[in-house]
Image (cartoon, rainbow, N blue to C red):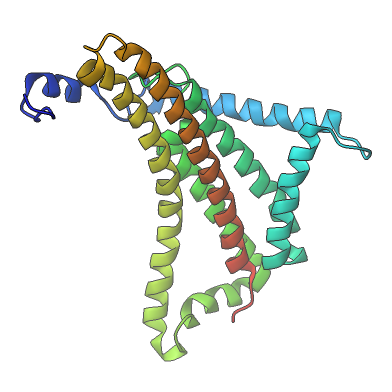
Length: 263
């Protein structure tokens, strides 16, 4: 058999057939196919996010803050600094959106900690389903365009796409480049988050099958699997934290570009 199973080997074929990506508990309602596990996990993440906000409101104090309040204030201070440095006072209304997105996405991503790498986990991170990242990305981009129109006016909004980045006589190229850029923004924003979270779930599945494939015949093979999975989960938590931060940061940067002057 050699050191590595070939793709034609019966055991390898069986393992590849059992490892599935992106499977969901689905129901069709009114002609629409719904991923029930994603809906349930999204609702659960929303409830947790709201509960965290209510807990902060209840425990907030103008005196010496507790650890929970201090964590929130640290995050808000970081976002305020970023927004003030890029957009200025006009960007204050973006802070609640950026912080909410960060907390919500982080909660969604942390659901991967309770996952087991099974085909149907009880609580999968909903950000590992392309539907949620794409919906959030489209929501952000629509708000960005609304902010751009309010900041520049209709005339300035249209002028930006026709006169940037090249001179006016290259208007067709300007329009083409700007349209492609705007279409790419929600796609890349969604795929970055989705790809990292989906790969985390896939890695858990591969680690679980590693016991059967390679180390299951070793007497302590099962114990080794108990070591590998927590280590990967910790790494997955770090990836989830980084991706939540990147999504919130890009949201701020998109608003910065949309609300900036023509130059």
